[in-house]
Image (tube, rainbow, N blue to C red; front, top):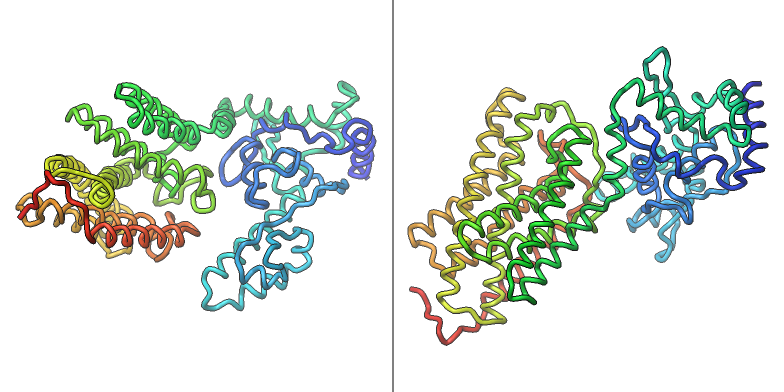
Length: 516
């Protein structure tokens, strides 16, 4: 009876004031909610939920918060015209759902009627791993849609005797609360009741760290960093005054440092626990190392390498949303030791960034050999710069592998177990040690050294991305991600073709002599 009265009251008030959105306003984005094992603002969770369901952070003219709220009110029996569509891209899944080649969306309401059929199809898939993942992801989206629609997904902070008890919207929004607030604000009693949860949570918890996440989510720091890095690269080409490029590169590094610092404050851990964070940290680390080495060696090429690789990583962060997710999630138990997380993983990722600098410059030399001009003196100078970055990268990688073994002994009771991630890290280390030894003993001449260095980075990509996206086995399963196999395969294909093309009929500068 109380629920009926509440619904009648809500319908009367909302029909006169908020005919389309009820009390679902952007004001609600600041509310703290419990989701994914941590407290986060509704703005962040709603954006993640809508992107998960539809592939977009907005639904028509509605913001993610408004759409999420309207969908949640269905659990209270309120009518809503909101219709969400799932994005379907996998060919086999499109065929199963009866979609045409040009039709890539389907209403969730239609999917709900076929939920059992989708579940049965998932059980029948044997060998098609990509199809199995696609249909599994769709089933997870259907479950999320149902949970939001039932009102169970929206957990609000309820203060009970100075203790926060998290309750679903349909449980929290009671008749007593609404009627009491109606005496104060008769025109809209619902919104103040919901907004009061923030006040109560802040008073009991005494920590408003979740509010910082709203500014972080809205700032778009990765986009700003990408723009600054591109401008810095352009400045190196367009202006003789190197200070302009150096200044823009430094500002970009500061923006990325702020981005990393915010993630550390929000998550309370080192920002290197998923693929998004490792790509971010690798790009930042390589740019910082390049700026330091460029200053110490008085060589602009270091800055060029750092900026070029930084553009690659920031492009991935901004546009490879299907492969990398910026979502901040709680750690699995084995990663909760921040000492080892902050030493082993950090050192390995920084080593990848340093090795990436050598890859960028090596490919640049190969490009100039084939389509430009480069003298022997220039090539020898660049080879020394590459050799410097290799020494830094290999040393850090060796330290990271050793620290990883110590952590493995601490966590799993063995120093080494030939886990895929461990094995490929060792392969990378041995590859670069051979290159360094060959260069130091003149066994690998300059021409061959440049080519081998460019090719060697494929081993880094296999250890970094390949284990996660292709092998997907082993004790390092907490770092696995879906998707990315096409990206990695394309990277290998392009790099191999580039190496083959640049090794045939190279142009030689008249001033260049061939090294014996």
